[in-house]
Length: 97
Image (cartoon, rainbow, N blue to C red; front, side, top):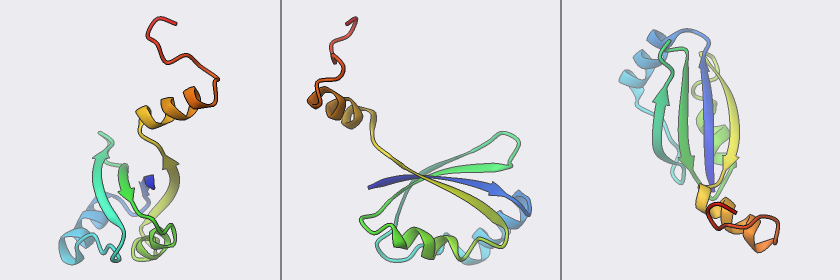
């Protein structure tokens, strides 16, 4: 399962990047970092994570909660969402339909 983790840097980007430099990402085994993007104002980070065990996300967040607020959104790749909708007979998947 994929998760989009939206982090708000409550203590500022400097505090977050200092901890990352000193301790790394601190991921538990079984939680995989896929990619990330940071807002231009350096106030938020959007991290894509992968895990079969959603409890691992909470374990990882516990290392950061004192300086970061989190929103966790389970996500699907677009092609998988399209397949689900098509299989349910809800929307045509043909371009221009």
